[in-house]
Image (tube, rainbow over all chains, first blue to last red; front, side, top):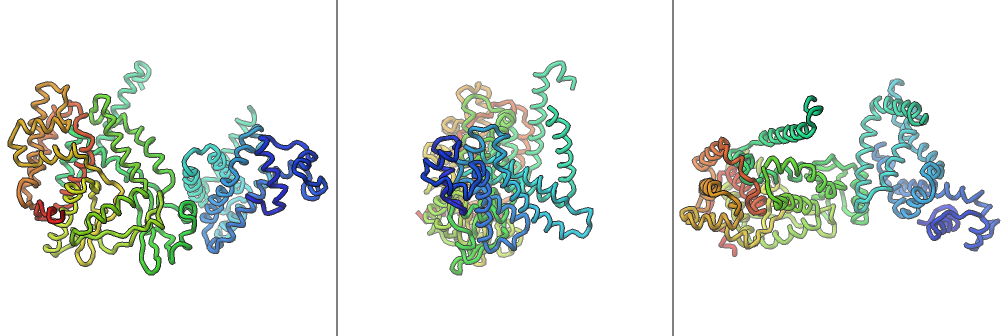
Length: 215
Length: 403
């Protein structure tokens, strides 16, 4: 997929990663091989890592563009908007599956690989924050309102979970990912209008701190 | 708990048996009309695991409703466009649940359509779900011998076929065309341009479901006509096409205002192979019941008698099936048969009652009978039931007019 912003360098970067099955190490060599002026490169990007992070941001932006092209989107329920986001996002990823597989399961350790998702994380959290605040607006009782930070973090964990599911999915046309999206979003919204998720996330955080991070 | 410490093997055995007992009780609670009971009992007593087919029909894989975005995605993925682009109107809310998906109403060029959409991943989960029930079913039906796999293969194969809407469309078209000359029988048109493996588009058919029709109808003459049409449709498929709509469930038929029978849902089509067809219907003749040697020969061909049965078992099974088939094939013995005849149904009920008390049947190896029995018997059981509800007095060989 051609990226919308500076398609050339971004696409060249992705091609280079796939062709060589490793990340380019120096801007100098990357530019030389691809016949780009180094100056040109630095005008747009501070480093190769910047591009690596931006790729995900572009996936997100492309998804949002497609979403807003759909006339019915604005009128959808919050749940349907999130579902539409997911289905569209994974369609975008599907077009770049080789790159995604390499970048998340290829050379780096999972923890390092997660680093490249930081822009995506903040964009996605901003997107879900809107949805959550909209949901809160419907509630008059302040007690029933959801802490936005906590819930957008939970939404992000869900995206990571589905991303992992998709990476490992071997079903034809990744139809199991579709089922996973459908089911997990339904569950999320079922508990979203409840306080259970808060308790669940709270428990999760507690266990994380007590068990996993101490090991 | 004690079991576990002293004897883990035994504990597992008990656990399996308890499980089997639970499922067994669950199956028993499915009882319906007299024939359903007969069907259940023939299964319970290990004659043929035909109820297995019903128990593990697609209805068991029921799925939650698909969200609007997933419906749109499925359309985009398989038909390359969104439903509201393809049709003039498309109702976002589904109007009906299908066994493994749902039905939406659409309008295209003024024509009302029914669009069936399948939940993702169902076809894939069938095999793994069946693997789970296999050990229980094997024990429940007392299936012995390596080739008992054949029953599971048969069921699995059919279930997987039912998830393939492209195949369903082909089958529907074939049967629809082949049966077009049967009067008072209607089929929807199918639209391949709006269909694929996961989406099936056909005409929206007006009418009420057969079960509702039989419950409320007070026009006996029209009901007769519907009954005869249904019978002719099945006999024509069975004897002429040798492929049959193997799910005669009241939900798969409608009756429209003019009293015509409308057949929908051709997901489950059973081929009737010649080497099964011939002995099966030879057994339905009155002469077969009267001539014991002939009878034994046929039930041996149909694998009801096993070469490894003891002489005692063999004689027992022969008597048993002689009686069973004597009753169940009775509708074929004369020129006409009245399915509202309560003496026939009470015979069926009595026989079932007696079989249910018979200890010996349960000990027999349940692995007997050709694999084709499963769906063909299910078809006849379903058909008999529908005709009973319709109180139909049918002309048995009326279908020959259409050849």
